[in-house]
Length: 248
Ligand SMILES: [Zn+2]
Ligand SMILES: [Zn+2]
Image (cartoon, rainbow, N blue to C red; front, side, top):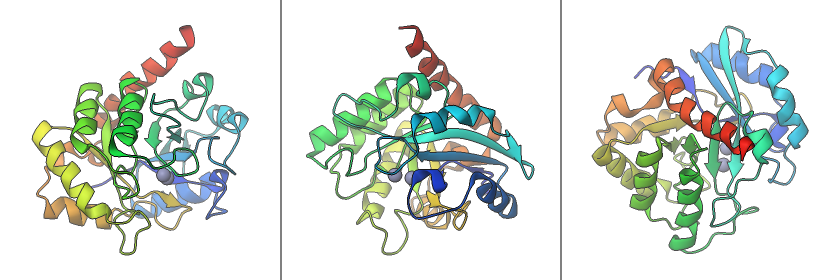
């Protein structure tokens, strides 16, 4: 499988686990054969992450470094069961890619009903490109409800390579991911592979996710990382909705 897109990465701006910059990540992407790199630092809701002003400034950054095209976005927290995201509408509208994820400092793990409602309502806002690591054992989930919402709104489900690493810190992610892959295959929902690399070290490393995809005989044509035109087409409608929120 020719994976040319990295959909999920963090720089020093996320405030933890790395001092690497956008430039460092782009250089690593080039070395790994990645042609489109999404920089998705944590939204300002996570303690220690960058401020909204930082994200506002991203539109002035180079769109290409070391021959790698860059997308500047965020991994936004979902904050409540209504699907509220941890970044203002104004700044979200400027993001080129938005992942929504649950993290304990911003969304306390609850029962399946509450955890699922948060993610499903974020997806139903139409503003989300990817649901990040919905495989965390701490967050019981109605996987089918999430996949159905993703189908309706053209949102991809992430296979997070860090979750699937041996001794990954999200518990038994493999079981949930296998269930999600089964549902995505059945309902023809796109899957995105993300390294979730904090820093340059793991950029473009999807080895654990690819192993599971092979194990589950998941169809390659539903994996967004292999085609830049397909990926850009999937992003467009959500960007348009984020812009519409400004006119409300
Ligand atoms: Zn995350
Ligand atoms: Zn992340």
